[in-house]
Image 1: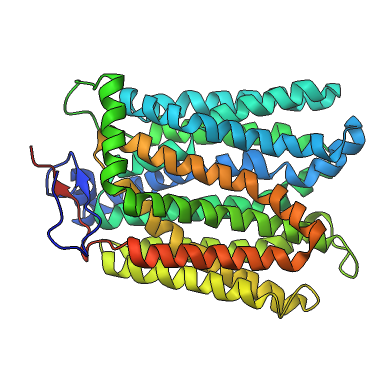
Image 2: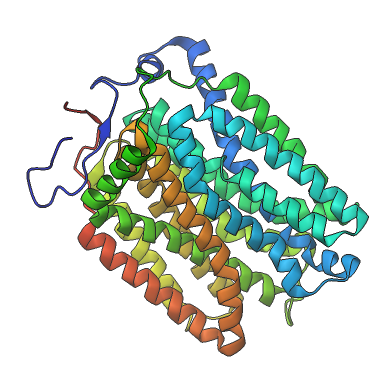
Length: 441
């Protein structure tokens, strides 16, 4: 393992691959022809479909929760469990699935995970038709288990397949796909509910099947150079050593990524609540379109950031700090321009989402590139597990604080963003050029 030679050089990127670029990447960048470029695009789309499906399977149900309460005669708390239990189950099982992907391969996990995810969605739909809350809630827990093997493993797969600039671009694309899913989910869910309230349950598996076919036929996972696998004990010791050695910046990155998702979903919950109140009285598709405004800022910024950062660690550091500064300031200013000034308020929330779009692709690129392929699934899974738990914690905590004092919500979010900014500024310092280096043995 290469070690840095100066105190400022806190992040070292490693790979099992040779120093030259991945052959498939080199072919595409070296002018492999229109056929090669077209195949590359379809490969990127197949990878991007995985986080898109992950988001659709959860966020499409948010608009129908009031209908579910009414049709199934359940409480607010029970309806919220349909979302929360999914996220918690996924968060708990992601590290386990990450370990299995390191042992058996990424596609060997993603393909059955998509099958479980889609099949459990159908079961949840029949539970809704039958009026059985117990069937719905157990099916949603099973969906969470399937979700654990989708987008988090796709991030590790990107790290296996690509290097340098292409890796950053594809990771930015996956983050943008995740955000795009958040944009269209409320709109699509509300539109489908106009047919029948439980239609989103049955529509989601269709997207799942499309993603499954794309993964099976369009993605070719790199073959292992050796069939030797570490025993479980040695594997866990190796992962522990990585976290101990790189924990100063790695744990900081985990915290920043989790906080970004906690803030995003907390704010979306807040907006969803206030937009239905007077004087706005927005609901259904119209409310979904308004919620899509800050998410659109996230999508565009994430894709652009992934495309421009390439191998430039210095640029990553600038963008991460700018993004967190933007989030800190914009969330703080909502105390002045609050929901009573809706246009200014939505503009500030959108600027906060832009800050998140600057941050997340940089974190994704650093984390996937920080370890060898044989441990990458576990490290990226720990990161994604914390992101899921951030998503699960955001709405209930923000909802509780709203009942106490709405100003506390944005004081807390701005303060947390400031803490993350200070930690990232002092502890996360990537190399000026983070092209992967071959491992020394």
